[in-house]
Amino acid sequence: MKLASKIGCKEILYLSFLAVLFFLNACETNVIDDDTAIIDSPDCNPEISFQESIQPIITNSCIKCHNGTVHPLNFENLTVLQNNAGTIKAVTQNRTMPLNGRLTDEQIKTIACWVDNGAKIN
Ligand code: HEC
Image 1 (tube, rainbow, N blue to C red):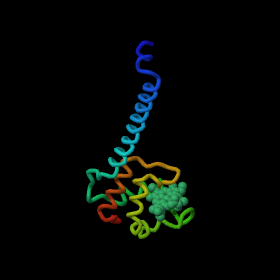
Image 2: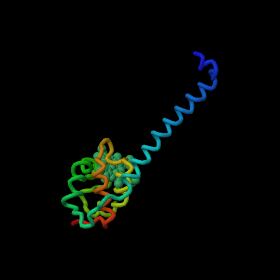
Image 3: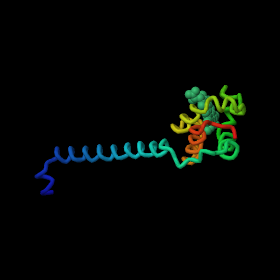
């Protein structure tokens, strides 16, 4: 009580406000760190195999919409997949795709690795 009356109500409010700002800021920083962790490229195998590493992700997480039904980008057509590799990397990294779904960080890195190494069908 004594301390509170010395400092005064205004100061306490002001300090609380600063504390809240500090915590909000801390949250924001974490989000940015996570994003960077994904974008900074992983130890990535340049010989990454499309059939082994990429096709299963596309089949499980993308094909149900990208088979010419929901969206005109048909990933059953491998040329379409290759021609849109850059966009695929971007929309998986920023998590706009898969719509209504989620890839693991590992899957997102794997896609980025494949795209960075020329999006080969191998
Ligand atoms: C539930 C349905 C659904 C799933 C699953 C899905 N998509 Fe999509 N996708 C859409 C729709 C609808 C759009 C168009 C609207 C939009 O861009 O938000 C789209 C747009 C896109 C585009 C074009 C974006 C642009 O900027 O032109 C790309 C590339 C894409 N999706 C890639 C993927 C990949 C890769 C996956 C799997 C990891 C995936 N999508 C899973 C429905 C889906």
